[in-house]
Amino acid sequence: MSAERDWASLVPTFDMFDPEHEEWKYDGFAWAREHCPIIHGSPPSTGPRSIVTRYADVRQILEDPETFSSAGSPPVPAPIRLGALDADPPEHTAFRRLLNPVFTRQFALQFEPDMRAYARELIDAWVDRGEVEMLGEFASPYVARILARMVFDETDMDKMERAKQVVIRVAERPDDEGFFDLAVLSAEYLAAAIDNPPEREGMLRQLVTGEFLDGKPMTEDQAMGAIASTFLGGLDTSRSAIAAICLLIAQQPELEERVRDPRWIRNDMDEFIRLISPVASLGRIATRDTEVGGCPVKQGEHLLLRFDSANRDETKFPNADQLQFEPPRTGTAGFGLGIHRCIGMHLARVQIAVAMEEIFARVTNFKLAVPPEEITWAPGIANCPHAVPLRFDRVL
Figure (tube, rainbow, N blue to C red):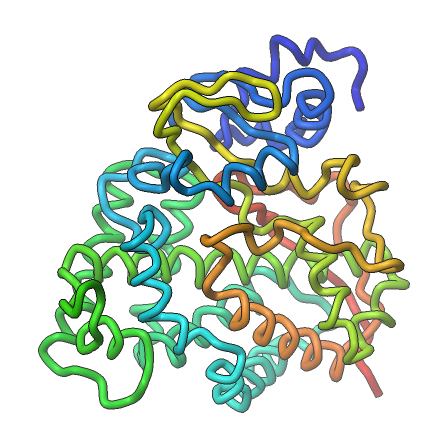
């Protein structure tokens, strides 16, 4: 940690959308976990937010939806609903009951042949060059194609490219115009599904034909929110994870052998996800005066739960800033905790596993194509590098 910084003054200014704050946030969170675990700040991009940095406190909040509500509490003020993300029970329970069947591992595995075909096609485009920008030339289009095929049954990749740009804007530079574009995009897909209900089992069919709460169908507002949150989660976080895993392998070449072992998906993948924390944070609102980790929390207080800080809490994960595979770590917050644990985590695991298997069937010996100091991370709701330029050798 940089001892020369005045963390007591600097940390309360933290703004997740300020690129300069990406440079010091992990050191700042480490200081906060020890000295001031709930940081009271009011950055211009979000307004007043109390940042929760310790693992135990994040877990306490996420496991108590009665005291800490999701309703109206996204990490940034959002003028649209975001489905299960900003719903409390019983509405949240109804969302999960309706959508869980189409986000199981078994459902995702039906699309494994498509995933492999997409991965191979993308790899074909750059494998002979000996270099690739892994985020833009593989991870982003790969994830977009899977979401298009599996969730939206979409064949027009220009529409998915438009969706990707909308999602990146909302994740990195949110404003009312960006959320409006996301709402319009979601409304288009919902309207098409209502006019022509999909015959294939999937999310859109569930939204327009399934029973939601008390035997009633979803409202259009609720269905649009489910679509919007699926775009945000499906297009942003998995691409971040794939690109960041490749970056870590380039920085620590011995990791390639572990990822080549099919058993890596049992425990090692979760450890990569813990360190990367593709989803950086979620929001909550206190419904009553209470206390978290010895700190008072007032009714109506907006809380920003930092998964990336919780996942590096040394009291839960010794040597937390490093990958540790043996013994396996348990209880990580990489896919969230509590009732809002990521509904898409099974899809994410399958598409990450397929991506890495197909990549390392064709290439080996990742190396950074730029000096390490040129690798920078985008600000925003997700933890994602701006770019991952790599060189490699072909597998003979």
